[in-house]
Length: 302
Image 1: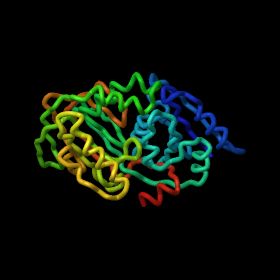
Image 2 (image 1 turned 180 degrees about the vertical axis):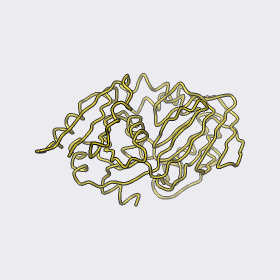
Image 3 (image 1 turned 45 degrees about the vertical axis):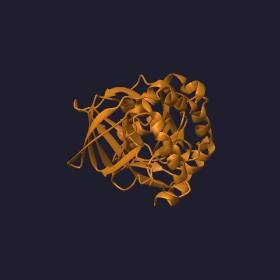
Image 4 (image 1 turned 120 degrees about the horizontal axis):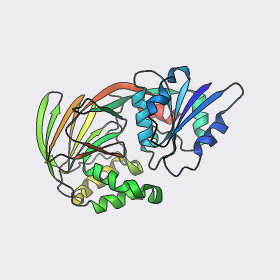
């Protein structure tokens, strides 16, 4: 096989899992090309000849995987998730193994599945892809404040940041949902594709990343403490009980979404904070991302 490895040097703790993967995978006749970036080099330059390879291995966190998936959208090139970031939630949603040797075995087994991809579009024409969640408001503030402490605290950095931001900014949202306008207020809006966040907790009742739709979740509470009942309900979802999220969440579904916020709110994509602000549009790209997957993933999503 011919593999192209995209290695994010800035992801996680830099423990070298990508090199363990290559050692475990390589057999006679294989060719493995590794291209590394600390965020300075645009990944577009790395993927220009991706069609010359049998698969692209994305070594990094959720942001790395989503960026690679967006740049390879609708090409049919298989992407191998090698989770080396802080939370690695996309790999968890895909039920991919965390250990490099197991990832090498999964790739040899050759199972692939196509999943929906989300795309956010801004007024200047810039576009960003997301596989899990694009958010504006409260969650973006959490991601930004957790940025500096992720290497030290790991996933706990997000919880520390959530407590620090207990009183987030409240905005008035104007949503365009497939041409139908809805107005509501809250502390944030989440555009959801894959639905499970830390500790396998689902943001919404059902995780449907192959149905050609996006879930739009408005966080209606005025402070972080109002989200606690919804959080407990989400935890119970893992047992199949599907309890109500009370009044904290309001959920819509659409193929195309427009979001305006007054006042404007900051944005994040798959756990990566940005300097971008609302307004924005989002759309689903049905089954545009092809991943190499585990047997458990096939059973869960087929």
